[in-house]
Image (cartoon, rainbow, N blue to C red; front, side, top):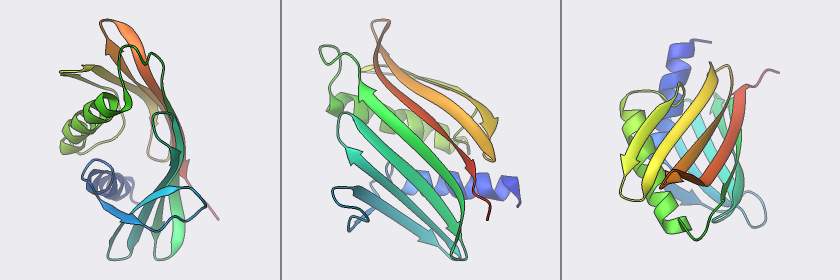
Length: 153
């Protein structure tokens, strides 16, 4: 597997779905929210449950075989400091900026009108884990933990 190509396709899929207002498809599981993307032999699905507190999985297929996946759980820690709408705006803006750099890992900071977005991770697309937070007046008001990597048959 060409890791640089894998990273490129992951970033493209992520940028074109949640962050880019991508194609919503019929739920793959009862009650899930699903966003789909495809390009040539590549297919991607982001499937999650919930709203302000949510859990989900992203999967990337190549030629019909799953090759990469990521799981995540995010939640509002301090609803008196940030709500789901402001957290979503912050996350989309911060991730858009990071994806323009051609990456989704490696640490990132972004300041916006609703708080400071900080992402810290370790690893590479083959095996990684990380956490994103939004600080409002120095308080961790939102957090998301994620992990993932290659799927091998």
